[in-house]
Image (cartoon, rainbow, N blue to C red; front, top):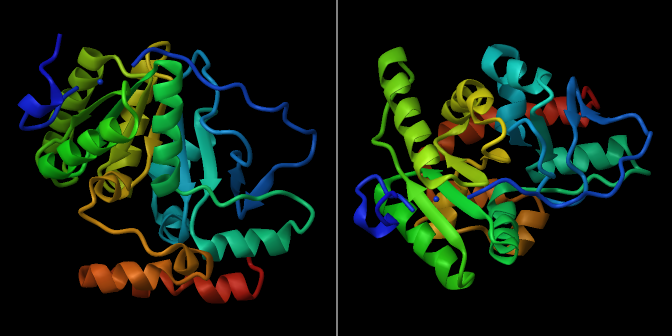
Length: 270
């Protein structure tokens, strides 16, 4: 048995397969943003299956990365991919494209709480994998307080770059943490590209053991309280990115790059 989360430097505390039944899917053509099928427009989390699924939230940054991101393209082409709409700009664009369809905005920063509540109610296990050790431990503690009885643990690898040796070591450590805790769901907070690469490598190894890997980016930091979420009115008015820029000025280059998506959305080229 692994030590408790509080005892770890990379934190540890971790579930068994199971999942909520979703409503029957309709025969309508899939909702698409460009070549990306938006599969998640209803109940969450997706149900259990023999294959470990990978949940991706599509926002401006991820949408812009597609042409130069072969790992992401490969993930999206697999039957493992589960994709929701994140980001107010994309949400508005798809509402305009599909005026008679339900296209809910499903952000990792919101879904992590839904997932924790579901796990607490169903007796399933949740692992938070990513962020820094302190933020990870705080997030585990806060979720336990919010949902008494929740079986949740954390593992925070040391910071690493995208190079073969460092990445292979982190992937081995992550797999060991998952096998030790045996979670049903793993929320990832490593940064988009690192999460995608880990999922592509580990998901096939977790079939029949883990229900799903969820690429939720900064959700662990937000749960920990180290990064504050924008007020709801800013989220709904498309100003959340400005709020995050105010909170984290280092995001300026990323924010400027994401502005390139606006002309494409305005002209309906999606």
